[in-house]
Length: 352
View 1: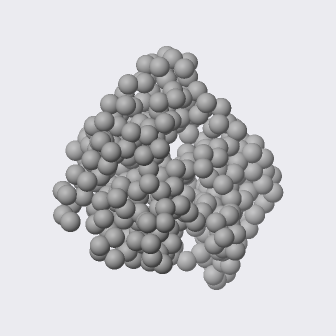
View 2: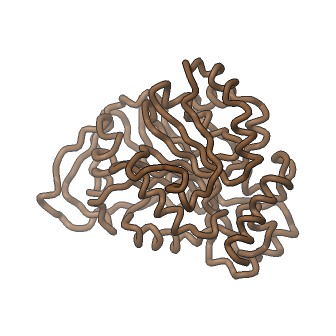
């Protein structure tokens, strides 16, 4: 199946076949919608139609977004764009991009309603129809975006390298990619990759996690972090029989545009302390599945983690002691895998 055919099949699936979540054949694109309290309040203010026609596998909305410029790739009906618009505030900006005309029209339909609902003096959100593989065509400049988010959409792209290349092009230095998507336990055979239903259900285009790591490495991003991971229960015997022994996982991942990251965690004796100043996270901040910073408690961190909390928009919320002048060898840094492999682990935003 050629790229044009895949684009056409996906547009047909999300523009014509799916009318609401009830039309989905698996649970892949249905997130459990477990939100932290501050996000739950915002979600309750969204128009019902936006919720009903939104398809996603997570809640990829990081904290500390005030005044930021945020780009949502594959925004669909606009749920996450509108939620983020309330968080960035009147001086921030949110841009949603989707290739499906029906989805863009649905998102734009509620622009005035949500602007008034959030008490904004004017709309701070915008929707554009286009391809996430070519953001330049939409006029999105180099180094112009603070945060890129995406909710179960990158798997749909037939050219994922182009998507991630565009993401790191538009991100500002120190900018963050924070997204949820479906990943596979192995490389999918070609017949599964080209199955129109599996493609539409976010399974056929799922990346093998190690290929994702290699892709980011080739683009200069040597370290990414998994925030949460859960195994996806398809709950469709026919599709389960079709995919065989392949397991699918919903991951929420963050990565930063930082030039100094290394491909292994190295020990420079640095210590990071979270100050508790992010409004959504007064008591703790979860960087990933193995870094939970408690307010005021110093934590020994590797050089990469120090950069992530010091050289990004989180920098004003952390105190980092030490530098990279002295190297002490490899740092014993790794994920908590036991709960993850059982489908557990922390939620998408464990701030409180």
